[in-house]
Image 1 (cartoon, helix red, strand yellow):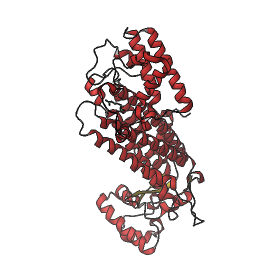
Image 2 (cartoon, rainbow, N blue to C red):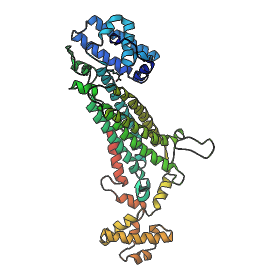
Image 3 (cartoon, rainbow, N blue to C red):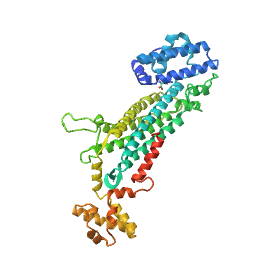
Image 4 (cartoon, helix red, strand yellow):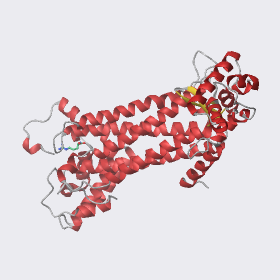
Amino acid sequence: MWGGRFAEGPSAIMREINASIPFDKALWRQDIAASKAHVAMLAQQGIVSSEDAAAIAGGLDTVASEYEASGVPENWDLEDIHMTTESRLAELIGPAAGRLHTARSRNDQVATDFRLWVRDAIDHADAGLEALQKALVTRAGEHAASIMPGFTHLQTAQPVTLGHHLMAYYEMAARDRSRFADARARMNRSPLGAAALAGTGFPIDRHMTAAALGFDGPTANSLDSVSDRDFALDYLMSAAQTALHLSRLAEEFIIWASQPFGFVRLPDSLSTGSSIMPQKKNPDAAELVRSHSGRIVGCLTALMITMKGLPLAYSKDMQDDKPPVFEAAGLLTLCLAAMTGMVAETTFRTDRMRAAAELGYATATDLADWLVRQANIPFREAHHITGAAVKLAESRGAALDQLPLAELKAIDARIDERVYAALSVEASVAARASHGGTAPVEVGKRVAEARAALGLE
Ligand code: ARG
């Protein structure tokens, strides 16, 4: 493509290090679409004849059907998807193919193709997150009143409902979707027509190509257009944040599935056995979601470091923008599907959860709150009195509500028999009906809002 200036061809190493076709062939649909938009514009502006434009458009359709049928050929001499397609077009239609590259460069071409690809990846991530949200609200609705221990420091803290716990992940997924939506709105400008870096002397219409490709309009600065990879970073940041959430959810399932907890029976379809220990059922899918999330963060780091020192405008370093984005997108799709399946199909062992909520003096705060409300004791003092009650219960190996009233009264005479009503785990969760609290009625409200937002029912 540039033979005119060179006496010698590239060395084998140069060909190999330069070739991006092994990975950027994934952009072929976007490359064909952008070329078709470009040549239609060149014809409308009278920059190429309508006959040549028609031959080019028809040839591009043929190339597309060839790629569809037998894949994109990988010839390192042709470097990348742009040259591979143009060279095949020339074989098919002859010299008119050479007019396609008028008023553009591979720099604006790849920036355009990649934006289109990332835009689709955002839509795909959004659909995956929506499916996860649907699974979460469905299970949360079933378990709005199922009681489990709530933890801080992974120590029993206060009873919560399983529905509330699951809806916490619904909220995370909602933020993830809004982060992807922000990224999409920001990236949806067309760099096509920025050409190599400075724009072009041909009378192109960038608004026309932008509209044809579904962009909101053209980008404003040609140097920025070919050097900007913020859209890819925005995507990776959103993906990384989503991956962190999925990893935390995976970790919950891993803990819950362990025998001392026994809170869940994972679906067989998302577990594996052991080749030596016949009793084992391992949470491998969840563990791999946890590890894949680390790889996704690695992809973000890789592109951030690739971009950080680059002067304007295009540098070849930027060819390496694609593998981390492709890798992250593939991993994210898998992780979303795995966690959606896990949420939808896990058996929650609510009997075990409820029994665990009875342990660990989870209603101690309720005793303190009762002392504040019924005996008008300052919270700090109530906290102290309750601490003494917990100590006593611990020495007896009993739950708080199993302590006889006489013994509670010996700790503080203001305690009376009404306290027992406050000490059950049901009373504890029902009491926490503040906005966003764990009370079944509050959880039910939020589930209903979420179902409406998701268009369920
Ligand atoms: N394959 C290249 C990339 O992905 C296309 C742009 C090449 N531009 C250039 N001036 N060498 O970045």
